[in-house]
Image 1: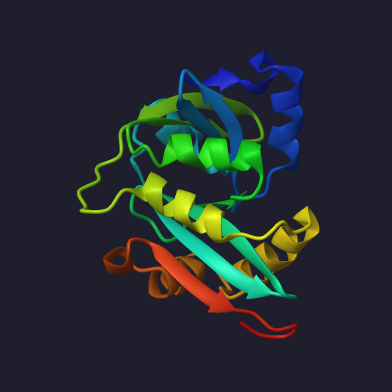
Image 2: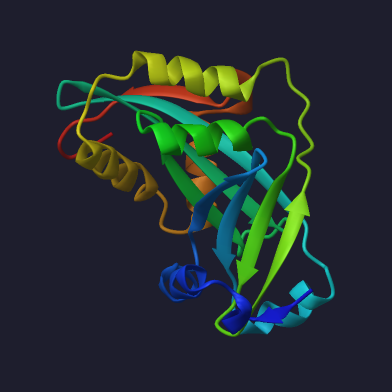
Amino acid sequence: MLQANDALPKNLQELATKITSVQALPLGSENAVPFLMIKLGVENEATIAEGGISAEFRASIFNVKFKEENVALCFVQFRLNGSEKHIYTASYDLHNEKHYSDCFDLLAMEKYALLLVTDNAHDFLEFKPVFKADFNPQAMINGARELATDYDPGLFLEVSHAITSQGATQADLWRFLEEMAPFEKSWYGAMQMGATEI
């Protein structure tokens, strides 16, 4: 049910003003159900209120060799209503315990909740992923994490930014990540990154 944003806790009200229109912002898990915040335009309020939102997501899991370290990260992209105009990206540092735990819960492929916000209002919607594959995404992020070295968190930010910059739009990024970590390779890719290029 669509409600005014002032009904949200203060911290979520603040996040709703800061989040960009391309981010999926992890908010943690409750009873192993991961929550993420996504910001939509005010023009989408009627669609949210009518419950006319569908969601799908795909993960892209990487080990990236950079500055003599092995960075383990996972991007999860959400696409609403199958639209290239509504793609949102979350990035997880798999070497970070909290990030890893949040990502692990999401990749259980059981259910997740999105807090959809606009400048004025919000709604919580729960989704159940449709996932049929012969690989376990949780095992894939665990394997990537095991290959990681003990790098500084700033290195994750550098690598994450370099990868997400490969797409001029979120739709371009969706295609780039799909090519680099395709479904048939269990959503996994390994790469070397130099100071100026991937």
